[in-house]
Amino acid sequence: MSSNDLKPVSDKRAAPSASYSFTVRLKITKQGGRGLSKVVSAIADAGGDTGDINTPRAEDDFVVRDILIYASDADHAATIEQKIRELDHVEIINVSDMVFKMHLGGKIIVSPRVPINGKRDVLSMVYTPGVARVCRAIHEDTSKAYALTMKGNAVAVVTDGSRVLALGNIGPLAALPVMEGKAALFSEFGKINAVPISLDTQDPDEIIRVIKAIAPAFGAINLEDIASPGCYKIEDTLRRELDIPVIHDDQHATAIAVMAGTINAAKVTRKQLRNMKIVVCGVGAAGMACSKMLLQAGVRNLIGFNVNGAIYSGKAGLTEQETWLSENSNRKGFKGSMEDALKGADMFIGLAAAGALKPEWIPAMKDKAIIFALANPAPEVQPEEAEKYDNVAVIATGSSAYCNQVNNALVFPGMFRGALDSRIADVTDEVKMAAARALAAVVTKGQLCEEYILPDAFDARAHKAIADAVVKAANEAGLSRRPDRKTSTL
Image (cartoon, rainbow, N blue to C red):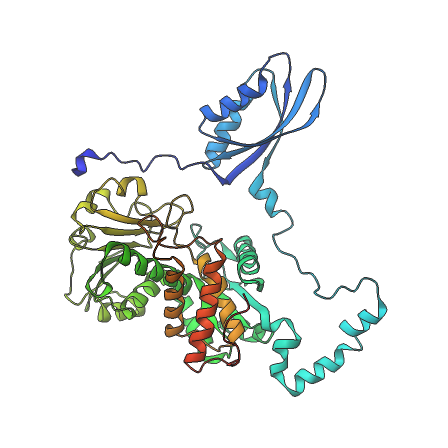
């Protein structure tokens, strides 16, 4: 099949999803007859999906219906709403955006582990005067804070809002819903109490000072949605100066997920990492971490691309991180275009933007090619475009709408769970690699195939496997401050 046989589908509307779901409350008069059927048909004709239908009220001459509708985006939702308004004998009483409704009041709460229930003796133990004895015990032996306070199971999710996925620099307040969502996932998948902290500064030195000041209350720090190059300085400094794990999740959890997916994709296609040619499009924080991990795993032929083209030794205008990559990859000094780099490539990893991988470049890749198009909200190439080529074996994206979702939500709950349980001071490269191999191993030999290279984020096996691997690796490296613990608490 030639590239001329393929028609671009980049303008194709995405499938309806819960991300753009809304409920319409309708008053449908009986005069028109079959009113509900007409509404459902109008929704379908507009490309929407119908969910639950409830009837909160029924009278002799009309019925009130609540209909859950799934759209593709905000404009699509507006189109569906307009189609319903055009129907005779149908009146829209109210429209509720389900995503906004879910966020009312925020997504997390703080609740006591010890119910007070109006009991004075309990109050005197959880607060003054009884709490003073616990304070003295910690003052005499600070390690007791892990057992006697929230510290042992608490993670600070810290952002400055400078680089929020798909939104950019939206600032600390607008980033707060993302941090709350992250905290909810920590709780759901890792049984960890996470506290969102949005800082009203984008000065790396000030962020470092603030995090150091709040660190005593937490067992680990999760840096989130902080732009490069500031994220590198913040993480590197805090890793040196704090005695608790500090992890920039956008880098390392993403890299672990990509590494695990690559391990299994290589198995499916019967390729060996050391012999693979990998092209990485986008070498920001996540792309750089992925590249470093792949090189650590034995990949010898890796070519990275930034907005100015291929990364090679001696290239002008490189950042400090890109300079490191230029000296440790692209050994043949390739200086051409990404189209040329993909000729004979085994794998494409995209952490850039929609449309970065042109479909017509794909046939030049090797047989059983692997494509990780991980940009959000839209991938570098649509899976529907890539899968039309016979030489493509494995396609992964960052979206749950397709198989093989590569998502850092697969990683950070288990990684932090293991770090907290082992009380490790730093999550080293060796520990991260152990986590990646453990995640890959969750997919059994019988399960592994082109369309299933990674488990789902709802698969509890994934989080436990990573947590256990972190604890084990910490023990083996002599990094654990709880060597008696052999597995995680998940």
